[in-house]
Image (cartoon, rainbow, N blue to C red):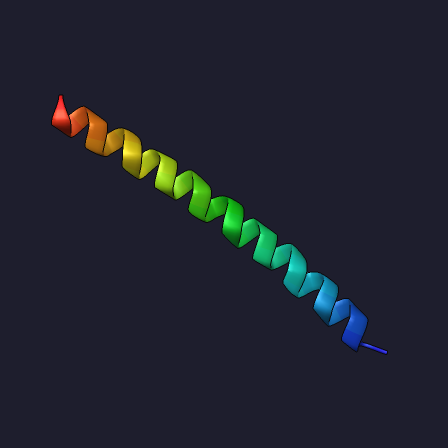
Amino acid sequence: MTRPIEDNTSMIYGKFYADRLVVDNRELHMQTTVYQL
């Protein structure tokens, strides 16, 4: 019965990875706006 635990863990990692991408995109966007100024 390790399958549900693995699925749950991968979903948590997937959410963490998605949130991290959002933060990276926001920081990248702020850097590009600073460079444009």
